[in-house]
Image 1: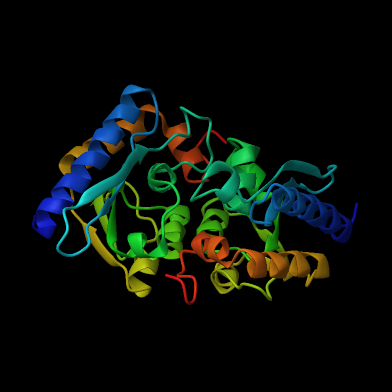
Image 2: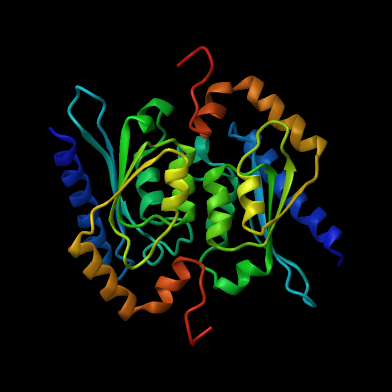
Amino acid sequence: MSLQEIDALGLQAAIAQAKKSYSEGGIPIGSSLVHHPKGSTPKILAASHNQRIQKESATLHGEISALEAAGRLKAQIYRESTIYTTLSPCMMCTGAILLYKIPRVVIGENKNFVGGEELLKSNGVEVIVLENEECKELMTKFMQEKPEEWFEDIGEYTPGTD
Amino acid sequence: MSLQEIDALGLQAAIAQAKKSYSEGGIPIGSSLVHHPKGSTPKILAASHNQRIQKESATLHGEISALEAAGRLKAQIYRESTIYTTLSPCMMCTGAILLYKIPRVVIGENKNFVGGEELLKSNGVEVIVLENEECKELMTKFMQEKPEEWFEDIGEYTPGTD
């Protein structure tokens, strides 16, 4: 399987999670963690989504939720993996990627929000933005429908209401 | 209550959690989040500890665990709070502090591990290291007793075993 095919697989798993979250009334950001050591079949270790609404959680963003679902892993596993996320990772998720030294981050879109991409790059992490239309449309729709939940999720005031 | 008294209260709550975690066989890192807007009585919003062992968790470090226990909060609350941690915060926890724009971080000790203190400072966060002997001794003891769990917690190889 080519890296491009792995990326398509990983992003699709993340998008499926984002849609699932949206259908549950949650924030539609999904993520997956794919282990793909050279010469082995890639394996989706976990895929999950933002859980702010579903679990009243302040920390289970999409990426944190995927890392949590993947469970306890040896350092080496993270270093042979790519993390996929439908939206540019916030500083918390950026920090988690740096903590575990995940070398590649594939992002569905960064038009609706730009997180810690520069910090990732300056630490040697490969950052790929796919400009996926499905990710963009889903997030744009949610941000218009529930701005307060979106701004809460990134620790910001909702313009005009707070 | 003076800021110094609030800090003593917050750190003691974090230390109590670190000791609790140690007594459960877990990683002895504790954290608390204290809301102390000017002119009001300070309130401990949450105190918790690292849950890697107890919950088989890859993301519930002390600080993340405290933020999670505090639940969903408005942006303003974080901005009037201090987060306390018995050990210098790793990059993930540093990122979480930056995400929520918590303006003050009080650290029990940073002799056993230095996390994202410089990144916090360069983003305008006030970082105070108390060099607390109790924090230092507890962490040193744990790192000697269970090095593999400690290194796993920071995404590192255990020297000589991996």
